[in-house]
Image 1 (tube, rainbow, N blue to C red):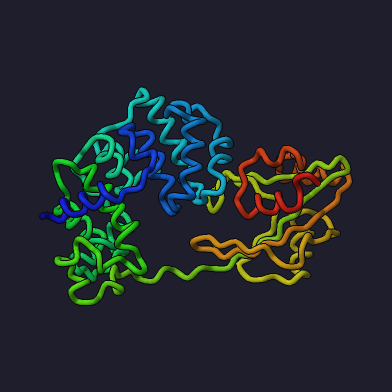
Image 2 (image 1 turned 180 degrees about the horizontal axis):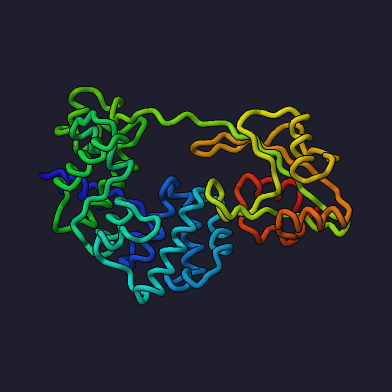
Amino acid sequence: MSFSSIICEWYNENKRDLPWRKTTDPYFIWLSEVMLQQTRVNQALPYYNTFIKRFPKVCDLAKADENEVLKLWQGLGYYSRGRNLHKAAKIICYELGGKFPTDFNDIKKLPGIGNYTASAIASFAFKKPVAVVDGNVYRVLARYLGITTPINLPEGEKKFSSHAQELLDQKQPDLHNQAIMEFGALHCTPKKPNCLFCPLQKKCVSFQLDKTSELPVKLKKTKVKNLYIHYFIFENEQKSILLHHRNFDGIWKNMYVFPALEYIKKPTLKQVSLDFKSKFKLKLDAQRYSNKPIQHLLSHRKIQAYFWKVNLSQADFEKIQETHIYQITNNHDIKNYPVPVLVQNFIHAYLLDN
């Protein structure tokens, strides 16, 4: 039996029952693939169900306000995915007449869609013979073929894409791609792969050479950097508070946070006080909610955040709001704003129902 026949047979016997596998609608497939990037299936599933209930058609998503999209995306992380999803939906709805492009290269032109997502949509929805290459596929091919080229180098990406295309079943690319991805997710796992009961065992190079644990090869990532953030909850006598809309490039673009000071090196309290006075033209007369920072880990940042309560007169409150163009809200309405998980956790712990 061929490689494809073996994994497809395994897939038919072992595949998970997932809603996006029961449709050829490119919108639903696209939505699932974007959500599954950097996200586990069990985490993405409730978000997927919520999105298709709220936005059953691509034009429903296109017509939505970005704040609502980001609010529903809240907790999935990598918020640029949600923003690009919304941008692409607008293009499909308003420029393409609501029809999803069927060609791989045309799909790839949409915001936020790269080779992997375009391949998945093209093969799953339209049965185009293009191989999907994700982390699971890299792992299966590296072990099966004994490829030692690092997967995160350009030459590695090129080599794996070439091998994936060679092994692809041209007649049923949708089944083949689903099968190899699922095989990597459930059987040929990063740790403790089920090699002893593997249907590919006889032809698997890494198994024969006892090098399964060494593959795939991946160069070390850039060192995660620290980021120290001091958030300030400005509150007036009417219990209104201020939010900062991050409408610029960087982490959490278009999300809402509290006004803050950010540092790449841990500051002293004296430095925070001086910077607070410089930015807000006020003396730091505040109390921290906790002496210990709330820690939050991103792919490239280790964040340590402190939250300060700052009570202001109405005059000072209005002055800061007008100077920095902050959004005015309150403890009740703040839950309607899209915020990073770090801020959401603080809100639930300290602000809601207080």
